[in-house]
Amino acid sequence: MRIVFLGAPGSGKGTQAQRLMAERGIVQLSTGDLLREAVAAGTGLGRRARAAMDAGELVSDDIVLGMIRERLAKPDTAAGFVLDGFPRNLAQARALESLLAELGKPLDAAVLIAVDFDILLKRLTGRRTCSLTGKLLNIHFSSQAELDACLAAGGQLIQRVDDNEETIGNRLKVYRAQTEPVIDHYRASGLLREVDGYGAVDEVYRRVTQALTAGG
Ligand code: AMP
Image (cartoon, rainbow, N blue to C red; front, side, top):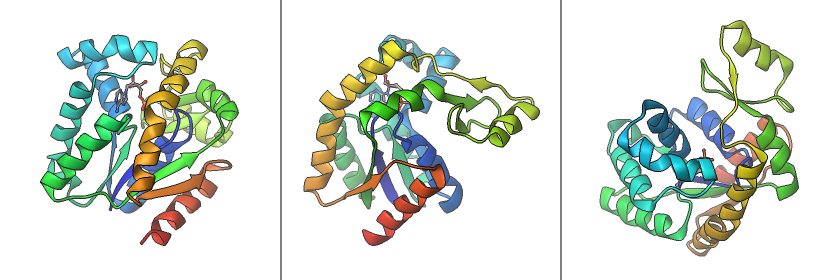
């Protein structure tokens, strides 16, 4: 199964992609995670990406496409993959299409997790990552047991540097201007499956799997 997850920052696409990866044994490829790893490791790529990330702007297409091309060539993607946070604009969507055609691995679906803009802010400001497991959590929405489990195991709840109100505002603007056209692109090619992103993680996950089944 080869899927793209679309949705605004905070829509829950990363959480749903992690879940799909855990249950279906397919790899989750998050360009945001790959870029944050490069920044943390202080690689040349990380240094080139950092300013755009801190400002909530998109990193240049050539950096991101190079990363995706390299990652999709690895053998663990043979059973399928979930792309999370990519493509982010029409040029990336077109480049992905050519790359997957070259590899003989076309997409099965593009899943849009739809959530209104007014609730994204609360999700984004409450978002934390467990430093031990990488699991995405939320101080407003995760259960106390889940949050405590991370801390009890010796982990910390880390907040992303770009999850502050100013940068979030810019990321949502960039999403509207550059990423929303990608939705129409997949609608036109018949791959789009739209899922209501409200409610608990389990509930949304059920809708995601139903949408994937319904789409064949
Ligand atoms: P994310 O974790 O998906 O919210 O991404 C965090 C940041 O990484 C974004 O605000 C961008 O600066 C950068 N980024 C992630 N994915 C892409 C992409 N496909 N194209 C350009 N920049 C990206």
